[in-house]
Length: 220
Image (spheres, rainbow, N blue to C red):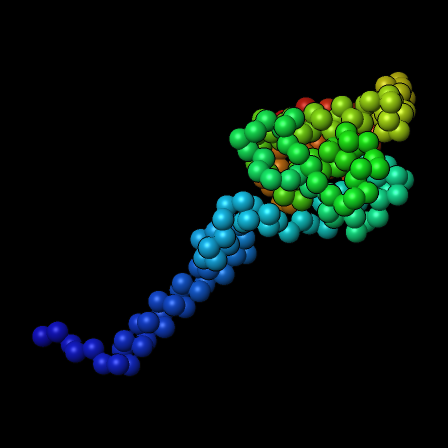
C-alpha cells in the first residue's frame, strides 16, 4: 500500500530540493561566477565574460603591482585607480591575440600603445589566470618583446638584468633549483602555465627576468 503524502511531506521534500539547489548555485557562484551569471541570471556570454573569473591571491596582486610594466605606467602619470580600467575590450576569442583591442581611461592615449597593451595582457594573465593556449603564449611573448624593446624604458631595465644574469659570478645552485620546484608545486600555482609559474617564482625570489627561462626549464 502506497503511503499517502501529507502537506508536511511535500514541504519537506521541496525544502530538501531547494536547499540542494541553493547549495549548487552558491558553489557555482563561488567557483565560476561567469557560468553562474550566464546560467541563472540571464546574462549574455559577453556580459558574463566581463566579470572576473576568480579572485587573485595576495601574491598575484603583489606581482602585478610591483611589475616593471606597472611601474612604467605609473611613471607616465597613470594612477592605481586608472590602472584598474585597463583591459581588453569586446570579445577576445576566436580572434588572434594581435587583433585584441584595449580600452581604459582617457589617459591611456598618453602612454605608448605597446606599453598599455602589455599591461592589459599582464593583468589578464595574472588576474584571470586563463588556461594555457596559443593566446596566452602570444600574450607572454608580447610582454617579453615590449620589455626587451630598446626604445622603451623597460628595454633598458631588461638589458641591465640580462647583463647581470650572464655574469660568471651568478650561479643557480642545486638548492635553489629544488626550491623553485617546490614553489612551482605550491597550491597557489595550480592551474598556471609553466611560463606563468616561472615569472612568479623569479619575481618572488628577486631574480632578473633573464632567469625565467632557466626556471621554466628547471620546473619542466
